[in-house]
Amino acid sequence: MPMFIDTSPPGQCIFCRLVSGDIPSAKVYEDALTIAFMDLGQVNPGHVLVATRRHAATLLDITAEEAAAVMQTAQRVARAVQAVFDPPGLTLLQANGREGDQTVFHFHLHVVPRHGGDGIALSWPRKEPGAEVLRGYAERLRAVLVTA
Image (cartoon, rainbow, N blue to C red; front, side, top):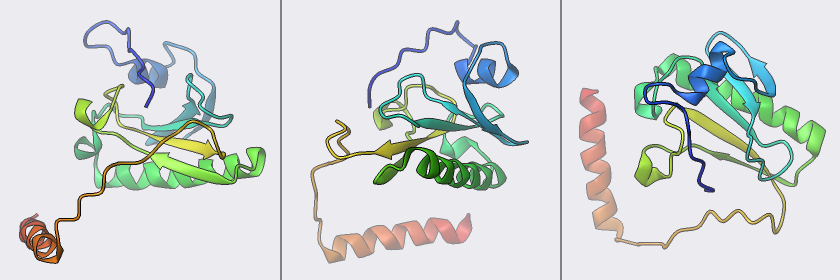
């Protein structure tokens, strides 16, 4: 992802300032739990960010209700992007933590219209650990999900 440097003073989240109306935005949609606005760093026309209204840094910090609301808003926005810009593809992207390439630490999801040769690369080296290792990973996750 292209790097964006949030120049907000410490303790002031740029998206919280946007939600409160302290800074301008090209707002697309909002409801009680979410807000959608044009990304300043448009990779393609129609690139929209969908964020929680309440400050939460990552996916692990939002409620199940907020998670559902963000996805519903993202689907609504994606339909509008498809109708207006008619891209041949769409990518939804959500990053968590520095190592996950998150650059603004307020939960948000990118709705990105896609075109051939648009410069976006979403690839990684495949690591195929084998069926037995995968079953072990699944077993460990199931054990935690049962108690969660």
